Structure formats: C-alpha cells, structure tokens
Amino acid sequence: MIVVTGAAGFIGSCIVAKLNERGMQDLILVDHLHDGLKEKNLEHKKHTTYYDKKEFLELVEQNQLTPDIECMIHMGACSSTTLRDKQYYEENNYEYTRTLARWALDHNVRFIYASSAATYGDGSAGYCDDEETIRRCSPLNYYGESKQKFDFWVLDEGLIDKVVGLKFFNVFGPNEYHKGDMRSVAAKAYQRVAETGEMSLFKSCNKQYGDGQQKRDFIYVKDAVDIVLYFLDHPGINGIYNVGTGEARTWKDLAEALFAAVGRPSNIDYIEMPEVLRLRYQYFTQADMKKLRNAGYRKPFTRLEDAVDDYVQYLSTHRYM
Image 1 (cartoon, rainbow, N blue to C red):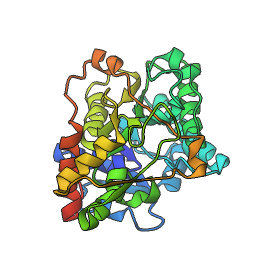
Image 2 (cartoon, helix red, strand yellow):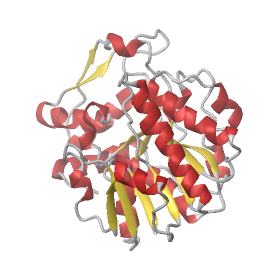
Image 3 (cartoon, helix red, strand yellow):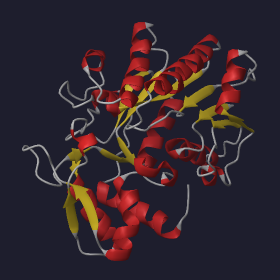
Image 4 (cartoon, rainbow, N blue to C red):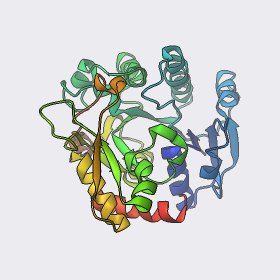
C-alpha cells in the first residue's frame, strides 16, 4: 500500500494518475478539500481510502495507520511563495513533514518528500544538490525557508541515506488549475493567448537580463512524476535530488512556445514587476542534474516546446490527468 499526501494537488494528483495507470489502486490519499477547487483532481482516481490531512496526522501521531504501508510519498504542503504567515509554514510544511518522516522511519516505510528549488534563493550559492550547497543557500521567502529547514533536519539527523528529498524546479502541466496565482505562467496566460493573441511578462529589473530574458528551469509535470516513481521503483537509492531538466530557458521562450501551440503569432506585452516581488525575484534557475543521472535515471526530459504543446491540448479540452 502507498500513501500519497497532497493527493488532490498538482503534482500529487498526477502521481496518483500514474500509479493508477500502472494498475495500482491500493492507495491511501491525503489532502484538504476545504474549498472544493481541487476535487476534480480526484475524479476517476482509484484508491482504497481518503483522509483529510488533519485526520491523517492524528492517525500517525496515535500510531493507528494500517501496518501494510510500503511507501509514503509526501507532496502535501503550502506552496505559496507570497504568504506572510511564517508560523503556518512552520506547522504545515516543517513540523507535519517531520512527524510523517519519523513515523515512516520507525516503521521501515520508504519516505519520499517534496523539497523545492526555492531553497536555493537567488542562486548565488549555485544549484547543486550536494550537502555543502544545500547548507549555504539562503531562501528568499518563508516557503523556501520551511523546505530548507526540513532538508537541514534530514542532514542533521543523519537521514540522508534513508529518505528521498526532491527539489522541484518550475513544474508546470495538467491539474494545476486550482493553484490560483501560484499557477504556472503557461496556465495563467493560456486563455488570454487563445482568445486575444496577447500575453504579458514582467519587465526585468536587473541589467544583466533583458525583458523576457529572465531564465527558469521549466520541467513538465509528467517528467517530474517519472522521477518520483523512479525512486519508488528503486528503494535502495536515497538522498536529496534536484528535479529539473538542467537547461534554463527564458520566459520569452515559454511565451513563444505557448503562442505557437495555440496557433497565434507572438505578441508579448512587458509590464512592470510588482514592488513586492522585486527583492525576492529569481532571475536564473538551472538544476544541476548530475547527481540524479549518476543515481541511474536515464530518461530524456521533454523539450519545452513539446511540453507546452502537450499542455495546451489539455487546457483546450478541460481534461485532467
């Protein structure tokens, strides 16, 4: 039996879909459906049991979970980079994760958790997923800090060879519609591009980068899920790993891929970046993928243009994974 937390969320629901595709239905799904927006992500998903995240935490704390759990894939977290409630991140992202990890370790259950590229901050320490770099990074927001704090706990407790942490870079794709302002630019811009043939990108406030030339390591959610399941399939491989493509692409590249996928000529309007983002903006991210490749993961990553084209097919038909 496999537990997937954040199962109605973006990456979590895509993991569940892929497990179902493999014929795996003996799943415990965990999430919090407080506003109804995420429920579509659970439609047609086959599973044994669903728990609200608070109910699940109580079962863990009281040691009342079924004993036949083999793996816990913990994707549940607050992923907002703008929320200013530090205590909420502490409780929801750090303490919750630590409780689940301790239970899993005590019961010999494989534990795979979501970290984040937000831990790297402005990138001045680099984007290598080795312990030295991880310890040098300075996140730019509370979200990144909460993820980094758990990574530190794993390192400080000597658990690096007993669990798997995954530092997701800019993941985009089906099932992110519920994330509101935290959706990918492709998801947010699609409707406007399809209807008006226009979209907006932020102007650059850094002289080293022109407007639209800020770079991100964009990874399609299908590739991200394949990496998660690689670690499920290889229980002898542990550690903290980047989940990106290793190739930074510009926001303009992404925009032009979206226009091409919709069948419209490129028409980008550059707008001022909000003041609240300027001091916390990442101008360049690019995952160092050597560690994952050395761990045996060989699949090629989907080219940005192909990923956007595939995503537009989902967006245009309102289908979900």
